[in-house]
Image (cartoon, rainbow, N blue to C red; front, side):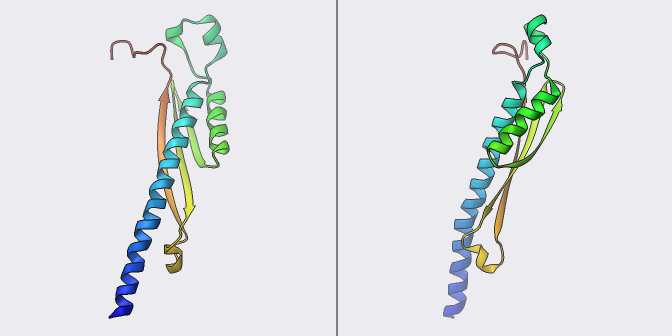
Length: 128
C-alpha cells in the first residue's frame, strides 16, 4: 500500500510544482509577445509621420517585423511575427525544464501566447 501512496504523492507534487512552471512559461510568453507587438507597432513609416496626417499613420512592415523580432531575441523566446495593415501580431513560445516530472520522462513544459498591437493616433479609436 505504501508504494502506491508514495507514487501518488510524487505525481501530485509534480503536477503542483511543474504545473506552476507551465503557468510561468505561459506568463513569460504573454509578456514578451505583448512587448514585441508594441515594439512592432511603433515602427511607423517615416514618410507617413513626416508628411501625412496623424490619423493616417501606417506601419513600415519590414521595420515592424524587425523590431518585434529584436524583442523576441532579447527575451530569449521563440516566436513568429506577422504584420497586416496597421496591426502587428506576435506568437511567442517559452519552454522550461521540469523539476519533478522529469523523473517520469516529462523534461520540459511549454507556454504559448499571442498578442496583437494596432497603431492609433491619440487616445481614442475615433467613434468606436
